[in-house]
Amino acid sequence: MGRGKIVIRRIDNSTSRQVTFSKRRNGLLKKAKELAILCDAEVGVMVFSSTGKLYDFSNSSLKSVIERYKKTKEEHQQLANPNSEAKFWQREAAMLRQQLESLQENHRKMMGEELSGLSVKDLQNLENQLEMSLRGVRTKKDEILHGEIQELNRTGNLVQQENLELHKKVNLIRQENLELQKKLYGSREVNATNRTSFLTNGIGLNMEEDTNGPICLQLCQPQQQESETTGRATNFRLKLA
Image 1 (spheres, rainbow, N blue to C red):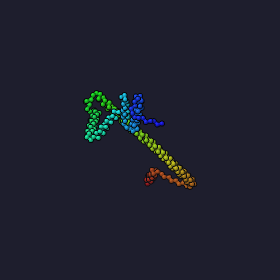
Image 2: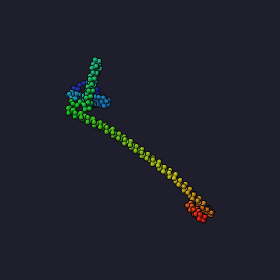
Image 3: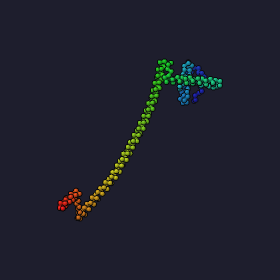
Image 4: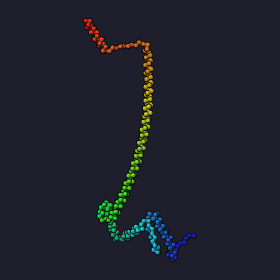
């Protein structure tokens, strides 16, 4: 059997009313949470019990939700009334001007200017803010430098690996050149050995063939001895004359 329809009216029994309030309240807050998560909506729910107890839920700040609601409602009302549209934009311009002045003042304080009106506590807070900012800048700088160092190390490892490969190729080429030189010089030594043995055998044969033939010898006296002999013969002829 299906569940019967409940008549929407005030429950007279206080106990039943309290139980129903607790159940419906939990279901409402659960649905609000699901709506905020599933639809990425900004949700704010406030529930006051009959005893004046507050139950609320907000996926952000409930105060910001209320302010946004008030602002949006005023905008709709002002846009509906053409006479108040100029006042709305005037208020927006004044608010933006005030925010700009506040940002400029904070910037001057961060730069160390216009500090005469600040107390010791304000100066301490400003110093803490600057230290936190400086710490964040240094952290970011260290991260960038660490990343660059890692990249350089990777590049150096790649270059070193390429150098090793090139050294291996050079060693292989040298080994091939040595083998070619051994083959070339080995053939030349064999040819030289054959030529030497051929010449030696030819000379021996010639010497054996000429052993039975006549040997002609020619003796030549030194020029000094010839001059001395000629001088002696001349002197001897002069003495005889």
